[in-house]
Length: 502
Image 1 (cartoon, rainbow, N blue to C red):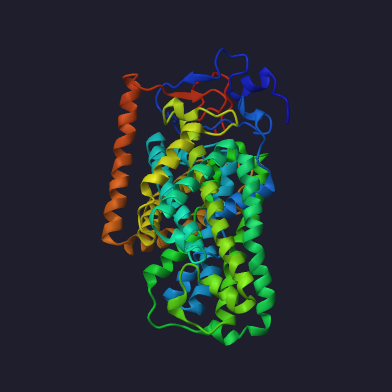
Image 2 (image 1 turned 60 degrees about the vertical axis):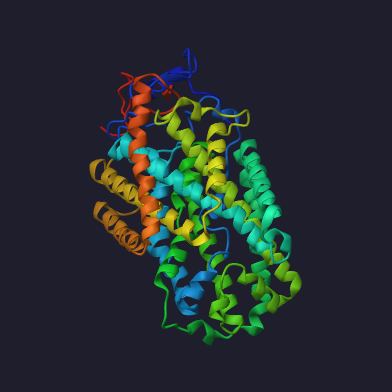
């Protein structure tokens, strides 16, 4: 861990020195940031005060945090086979990453290293489109993340209930859900490095049984089974399943301030995680559809446990069921980390009240964790398919803002320093965003009326919430402040600021 930089280095970057009377300064206006004049600070030289006291996340834990933000393994892919049959399911998990996952991961690598701080995509959009739209993105992404996280305790029990029937309903099920939320929330409270290494262990436990199943299944594989094409394709279920299993690459950007040397670590981790995610989807589907005769209706959540039983026996079936449950836990802790640190990052930029920037003694966002856990408790009553559809709808709105911000910054500030830059020019960057944008339009068009209504209500809440918070700031009902340890987005608070762009 490096020692704090000298005062002259901080002054030159427009960042107050550790000798200032306070480590935070009052914001002239909530989330104020005009343009993209982000200060050119090397994150390895200037680190926020206090944050250096906590251990940073290294490459391996970051890879598995991304893995669980996006995937968690093959569990949840079964509906693609039920919706469209083996061939389209396999092709979907090979082609879809080129349409969606790779562009999103590349944008996250470029923008995450350009703005290496907690808050991630909120800061990108604020820099390109202003704080109002940055706040709207933050609200939609946080809310969709909490909806997503409400699924995982339920999935955990669904995977275990065939083995433990008492967990299928009633008071025992409710009690276990509550206990899980409390225990996993406490793990997030204890520190991001704990969460990262827990994700590594859970990931290895979840991936290993599929590797063993693949070896055992080789004599039983029949390639002709992979070529089956179904006529009655459920396109809504098929695309929703693909989208849900291959999005959220940008979520890791909200903990960029907690990453060790993010300008190098983040792109490397995204690349490794992309390979890991695609392999963890494709090969289990290849095994399950190739080793057993097709029973399309049976392909639903938990079917891989049956596949394992037919291929390797009861012991492998139990391992797969346990791996599925462990995967749900990994996705929960990873999602809660990104959601809570996003709120901390927004508070450090003056978009939320200062209380959200409060860290526990372990360096974790105390209020953000509590609020995210409360949201999970409130939303855990929703059905699985409704939850996925509502989360996808909100996520689509947020991604549109991210694409616009990415393109706007490329056009308006092409020479701005980017530690990692996608090897495409302005036109290439725009063309890269077109296929995922078309996909977003398709996903929105396929949404049911109920999902659209619920999602639009959530959007309207965000549109009204930001002006209400600004009113509370003006009347001094709530305290807002911008962290003095962060680079200045507009370069107006210090005469010696060296902006990212001219």
